[in-house]
Image 1 (spheres, rainbow, N blue to C red):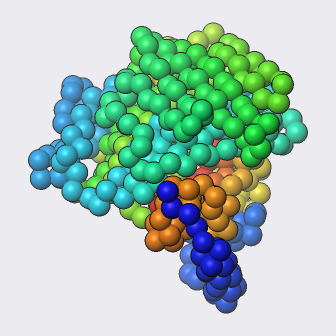
Image 2: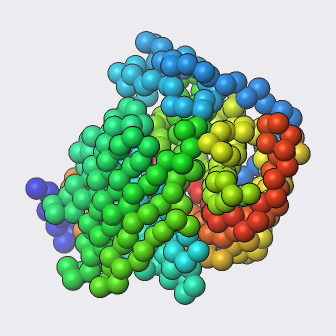
Length: 409
């Protein structure tokens, strides 16, 4: 096993100092750059505009790729109809990203469970958030080498992350998903255990193929209508999740560019006694044939075209607004909690112990370029949506979240 030498730690320290000096010496804003609430220099994610897209619906099973690696299809479906033959992918293996992510939430708590392989790094992570206090009760990411986790190419097979005695296990049964996990914190006396049953309350969801080019793509399957039941044990306290707790699945496979950004939102709750959930987003790829936007009500997807987001980067806890170009959705989202995370070179050095246990020095230098800048607000949606048949539904205090992400991977 690779062991890092003291002089290598010194070298990494020198690299970091040079990085900081470089950043300070290039503090002048370039065209299009702005500084947000946290002092971070970002480029605003362009609005999607009002021109309609095709919204090409795929209604039967179809291969995603041709044998030459080019895309065979782009569009959306109510079911995960798209079949991936990974041997057809021609992109650099480091550009192929795979993940299964669940964000869960209720009135008091939120959090996430993630298993991912981003091509040069794989990991499992858990977080638990407390809205009333604004605290991150627990957050831990465990790293392993790429390829150590088996990722199925469909959305229905189980998946497991394992590292020593730690694990995240996702079992998939008819109309439900079981998530079990046990992860150690920063000290051996700190650990978190969870057991969730996620009931699939709608047979339909949103499967979307977004191209980046003729041969690069993102295949996402968003399932926002999950009822979350179960418990989390942390520091001798049990956190219960009941019928008013929800979750959304974010299942993804794709060949991504090195730098990217996105906006993503989801929510769920009862409207006129029936579960209504939503998935909204944009910011990457070519959305000519489909957007990520849709409402799920009484088990059926009501597909939306473009939805423009309005939010204040100088204060992410101010209300966010969402407006459909078709006039079929207008929502105001009021945050109650903001999760802010900025993993840059300094943040990656925080993973140094895990990195040197699993990677060579040259691999570590490459991984130190990884960045992830996240602002994820949890709160409530109010406003209206209009279904396919023209029915207008009032949305009142619908629980959910909205996130802004900038990433280099």
